[in-house]
Length: 185
Image 1 (cartoon, one colour):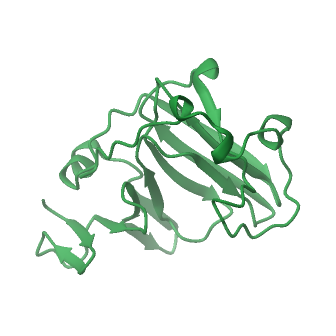
Image 2: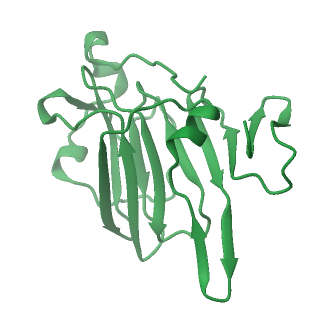
């Protein structure tokens, strides 16, 4: 695993003797959701980074065949989500390319609902998906579901009509919920 650091519950484990690894994979509180820190090369001209390298991500345990890339442009206060697909579940590799200073990525395994809120003036969010978008296969959960207790940083977000009408988790029949499968571990 040349140039890759994997972090576990007991801390960061180094799988390379390189001083500056190309890729760090950090756990979150949710199994199957990881923060990824690609190496960034900066100088007076700006910066360069690999946003995806299939072999390196596979060596880090993220073995997805990404088939679709999406770009979202959103203004301050926008909240998108929480979305998922059932038969065409999507793992996602997400990165904010405008509206955030860090260069981190977020990997979300199949079986999770995905959403985000914009705090900057504008945000451009790109994400790779492991399956194609199929509108009739989409499901979702209301962003403000009290059972989820997500501490969103906005009180009255800008929502699409579709997102404002999503049901609470308790109101979704079990057969309409995604199945979690973590391809990263």
